[in-house]
Length: 395
Image (cartoon, rainbow, N blue to C red):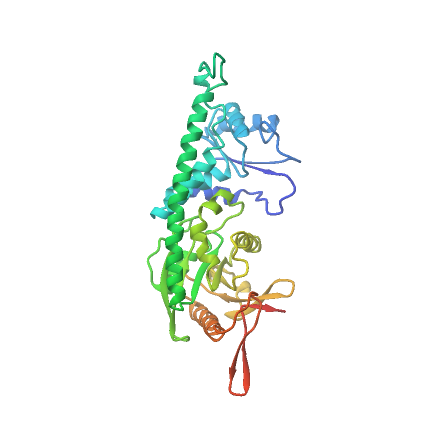
């Protein structure tokens, strides 16, 4: 059973819980019922309040649901109280995403990143789950709290494991840094695919470089970064193209921290291909969420090329008049946009041409330095100055 609560302060609240249903399906769960509620603020004990909790309990019994998933994050106390009240396991959005990541991680690095995020999540949920140890004694002749010694032992074990995983991830981060420096020495133009999960990044990646990365119509189909060389005939050179993990609304902060080494590929890129599901009615909100996470990881200043994927799913009246154009994303700021379909290959030539233009512009500008992504690249040919447009243009 899926539960979502609208507190009135989130314009992106999904009243149909469609994204949570997709997350549940990605985790292998079958949705039997959906419940939404409106509140001014979360109930400290049961999150939804006692009345709504009783309603959910009745629906659990009527549908024989095996568990309840909340679309918002629950505190450890709220989760524990809800499980006691409802009589079934209770999970929140963070826990569900962590389960999906744990199931999908394939590489050594990906598994370490997921383990770190899970350990940090679990470490906050040990309190008062050890009632079987209530008789355990504390210090000198004094009785300790319920399970006090066992909780502290588990906290220490988890803390030690977190330190160990962080140290191993730091080693991976250094290795990635060495690889990036090698590409920089070779003068390789670095392109990273970013976007909302299930926007078609991996399918587009495979179509561009003829790779075999796993791609499926599900959330977080791939987690591990894959980098391949992409030859651009127009530029007469190859660029490195990296496929990164997808973003999602309310992506747990601990996951962003854990995937720092992977997400650094986006922050260090010369160009971001921001893949957008053109057929999704929530594409504007999804774009904004991706931009928010990019800002959080220090990639907000990297030039972007918007790639509106799945154009084959657009209705006839929504089909673009031009394969490539410019779109205003903020007041006074425009970005280049290309419509493609990774499924049938339409628009890929226009996309390659746009990437080639960015690579050529960077090559022409290689002798200049600028801290602003909004500069215009210029090259001097004879007595005339030719200006190559940057990917961030002022309207």
